[in-house]
Amino acid sequence: MSRLRLHHRQQAAVDAAVQCLLPALQPLLLAVKPTKTAKGFSNRAKAGSDTNRFGVEIPVADGSPQAAIDLTATILNTTVARLKQRPGGASAAAAAGLSNWTVVHAREDALQLAQAAARGGGKSSSGGQPQVLGLRQACQQPQLAGLLVVVEPQVADVALVEQLLDEVWAGPAALVVNPGWGQQGAAPVPAEYGRVLDSVNVVYSFLPCAIQGLLGPKEGAVLRTADAAGGATAGKPAPWRILLKQKEEFVQVGAMPRRPTSSDLELAFLNASAASSPLTKTAKFIRGLIPGKKD
Image (tube, rainbow, N blue to C red):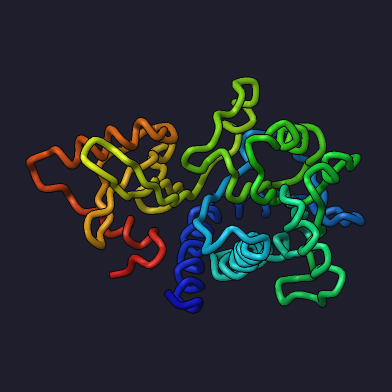
């Protein structure tokens, strides 16, 4: 597969994720009472609020630190661009300018690359450059105001993530990108940190998965979309959809109110494979939210 093709697939995933994020993010940005500080815009939001933390989980072409940096930059730039296109979005887009973000890298290799790029970089078309910190470094700050994005924290980092979100950060919105605890086969998160993970509303997740079941290897994906077609409705949380790959199509074979475990996926795939009736193909909106799946 060509690099250009991979780029287009990832941009499609970012577009879908931002589409799900903006309905919740825009009101928070418009509610900010901007007070310019050395660290960007501060606001009077209470630290530890459970309503302004969001998660996006997007597959990346590789696991390199540069890929994590590029994905984060694409998400932030796309967010500003899409806000400008929304009714009344100009003010929100200004509040979401890059200089009002703090990017926190959990990976040391990504942090070093990002800080080196920030030292040598110029002003972005999306409004300056974000502050770049490591996770431990961020937790040592007296306070972080403004918008926050935490990139690729792992299960081992969850105590620091809790400290950052609950004790240090006090801003309008925070975004957690590709946390390790969302990946298939990840170690379980200690129960005492369940609250902070539950406080992060995953607005978009598309995670390919593979299961070695009784009927042989099966490929599929887990999909969650909030505040988009097929997402949260009538005040109900968006479901986690279990998709089975059949030829070149993803077919929905289950849905759950919580994130499916490997056992849940295996059972859903087994039941679908054993069913005699034909499976219903994914709805049109699901194809539109899966990278590379277009009509």
